[in-house]
Length: 425
Image (cartoon, rainbow, N blue to C red; front, side):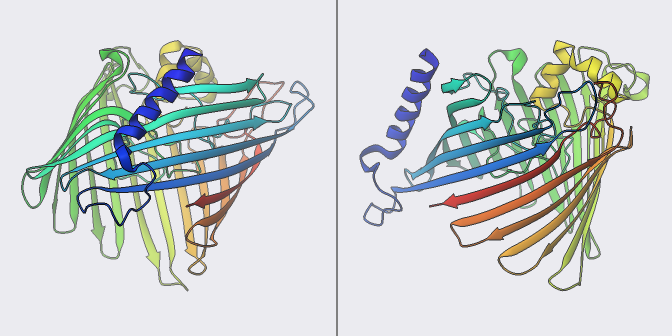
């Protein structure tokens, strides 16, 4: 109960501080030029229907449905020419049909686990009914950004996304998406102080201090960025929770194609003997290599391919199940240190805009460890500037469960259909 009132109280306080006396104004034209308020409201209604694999030791009820509603208020205030404040307050309700309640294993919907790098979650339950219904509210953004000489300083709960990878990432350290997560518009906010400073016309420094409930759950990382011609590169160094991280990224235009790569090395307190770099148990690598090319076919057919290696992953799915029983590894997985539970995966995506309103794509995600994977055709229809409809089908393949025991990363997953209606106003 205290968490409910705390979340409501802080959300109301932040909204009040940002909006001030003009809280009712939306895109106010009468306000002075140095003080302008914008309120954007987003409503997303999602339905996920799944059918589980057949196995004599699994429940006979194989069908399941999950509905998720997200109502989000994004309020931005331009307090002066140099200062902007923003608050995002969200309500979400999740309903799960009676049955297996395992349809989230592919990571299609946003995670329900507590967000990393938050001093207080400010994410509280308002109502629930067993495992079938939950209604929550959350303060996902609350920051002030100020222009400083040659850069910007941002303080508060904010979204921080790093890396060049599209489906995978080795350097997205704060709140990464899972490879199959559908809704990527709202990255989870972290409690951070971020300074971005331009060192020259082609180089900049980005420093982030993201705070958790303790220093062992916090991150202090810097990123040096620069470009020359058609090549863009980054060097990253710092501390992520209890790990020391050194990383680099590069992206370049190669003729008419695009290529990108990421490499990160983590010095961890616990040993990873099977994946340590150069024989060192405590040096864990992650890497992404990919590229894209748009063919002159119709409106333009774009192919994207990526390979991902995660030293935090297991050598087999059986080993991954054992690791997930370890609290340390489970904490890493929920924090997003690895987006796959095995070590190697590859993906190929083709996307094609049918017309200005309708776009299509086909994704193939494949585990290079056990041969399982998922094929995902998708359609997205922008009905208007305010209304959109998205539909996806998830076809897993690979060895399914045997006598109730899963054997591959994706072969145990559900055949799933997803549809989402989006309304912005």
